Length: 130
Image (cartoon, rainbow, N blue to C red; front, top):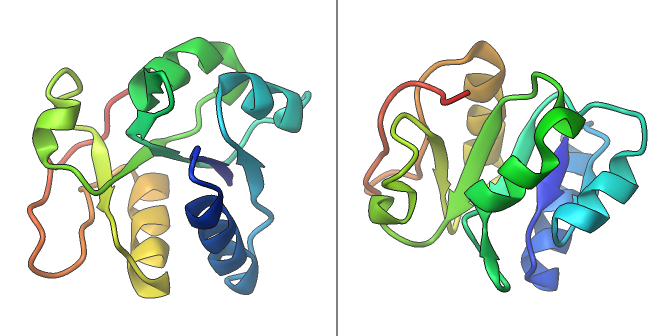
């Protein structure tokens, strides 16, 4: 699981949750560190923050391009769905989230269905973007 977030505390927390769930996360704060951390490997799934220092999650995903292979992408955000207005159908995991919501987001991404959000949070469109 590739995790991209420029907030060190959030990045560490998500990586720790993934490790406790039995995953092998690769942590990165931007496109360059993601590319370096992945090397020749393709992630099974990508978790990427929407708002990053000087860029956006969708821009980072675009920069990574072929380095992601066919990995589904779930965007993590504490903002409303307007932050992803240019990516209709994007999978979204609303911050803050817990291990249960993270697990659900990973399963949905890998199955290619529906976005996930903690209870009471608005949910994005229901299909994964390419």
